[in-house]
Structures are given as structure tokens and as C-alpha cells.
Image: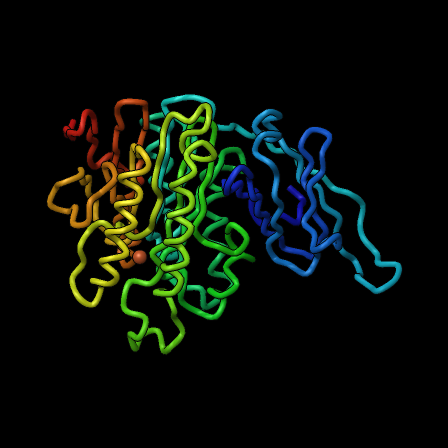
Length: 374
Ligand SMILES: [Fe+2]
């Protein structure tokens, strides 16, 4: 394919929109056409070309209805104050499969720490055994740090190989993503809600909230060299959570919602050993808001590099889980291996699958407040 696209687009869900990110190898102007409507990558009416990743917001309703979109671009030959020179319009069409019904097949990749093939292989193994996935969750620490722009290519290498631009993705930030000079420019490289890394999303019958516990040690830890204010950030996020959990009709109790999910890199309801035992009061308060105000079906997390299924009240539940929690990523960067987690969510039961690229490691069913290994 002779194109400026480095990878297939990544169609991220944020709010009631898709934020479509398209990494490119050459300077170009870009827009996306859905039906008769065009959506542009622009800055206040000026088409952007000085970017390595284009980002375009498309309302979910239109794309869900059309089930296809066209990436349109013009190569930028010379950008000048007057009479800029650009190439002809080039177009690539993608089909799109929105989430419309249950069950929903989700594959989570967290903690890949820069690995590409092992997590992609795990997702493919899940698809081979259980059918095509409907949603990819990139749940933090997919990269090892944000100290080099090229690191972000891992997001798009993985998403392109798994989704081919044809299904939605939910992205959540991990603590490793907060490290390095480009961490402060997260909204240029990954989806946010107006720069905020915590947000809600709606995908047909699924409503979800992405929460970001940010760094995993106290803000004054020497490793951060005075660069972190995650306590203040979590307080802002608490205000967001308080507001969202009061608005059921707009969000989690809106017409057509049948399943509700929490996505968080850190399994913040689990107690950690020092120096990671931070902000337990905030963790408990977040859990209380989620538990008392919303009826969640599942929480997905990574971070601890373990494979756990924790039910409310079980030994891993220190702060009052709102629902069953699946912690599902086990990377081994030295061995270049990765175990990820697939979940198949239906109204009254969830099948949990842990697998690597070669084999299914474990499957379990969560139903009626119990889990049973198969
Ligand atoms: Fe982490």
C-alpha cells in the first residue's frame, strides 16, 4: 500500500465520540469522511501538517450507523504563508464494526512495556479460540516510558495489528507513561478528554469509566526528581468522579446501557506494600463512589504483573471493590513473553481467559457473585 500511513488508524472511544489517531510517515493534511460529513484534524480552522500523529474526533453515532469511514489526506509539499503547495487528495476506506449487542468480547493488553509481538500474539490466540474481539483495551504501561517519541509507536503497532482500524479501542494511561519528557504532551500521542487522562465512554450497550491513579509512589519519591504532582491530580479526578457518578441518566443509566465497566491501570482497591501504599483514603473513596452509585459488572486492571480474579470481599479487596476485578497481564520482557486477558461479558456472567500467544493458561466464569475455574 503506497500511503503515508505508518499503521492503520486507532479508533479510541472517549465520551460519545471516537477519537481516531493516525500515525504518518510524512507531513500531510488529514480529514475523515463518514457518510457525507467530513471531520478535520485542525487547529481553530487551520489544517495541521506539522504532526507525526493526526487526531480527528468523530461522533460515535454517525460512525456506528455508517460502519465505515474514509481517511483522506493531501501530502504537504511546501507550507508557506501564501500559496502553500499540496498533493492531490488520497483516500483509504476502512470498515468499522461497532459494539451493538451482547456478549462483548474484550481483550486487554497492559504492561507490554514496549513489547509488540507477544501481546499481539496473545490477542490473536484469544480470537482463534473464542472468536473475533469487539473491543481492545490498552490499559497502561504499554510503553516503558515517555522519554522518546518513537516509544509511542508501540500503541499504534499493537492497535493496528489487533484492530486493523475496524473495531474500537479504550486507552488508559499507566504509571510508566507518566515518565519522560513527552509525558506532559500525552494528548498529542494518545486519546484524552480535552487533555484529561480520565473520562467516560459509551460503546453501544457498554458504558465505562477510565480512571487514572497516575504514579505508584509518593510524589516526593527521589525517582521522580521533583516532576510529579499526582496527589493534586487525583483530587481533581475525585471531583470528576463525584460529578459523573451523580449523573446516571446521562451516563451509566442512559437508555440502552446493559453493561458497565471500570478500566484502570492500577488495581487501586488492592493494598500495596511500601513504598507503593499511597493514597489509601483516596482509593477507598473512589471505590465507595463507584460501589454505592453505579452498578458495575467488571473492573479491568494491570500494573501488578499478575493474573488475578478478585471478587468483592476477597483477600485482594482491601478498599471495597465495586464489582469483580480482573487483574490480567503478565509480561516478561527478558524472555519476550506476555500473558494477557480476554473477557467475554454477558448480562449475567463473564468468562475470563488468560492466554499468551501459544496457549490458553486459565479460564474462569464469574456468575452470581462466584467464580468457577473451568
Ligand atoms: Fe504499572
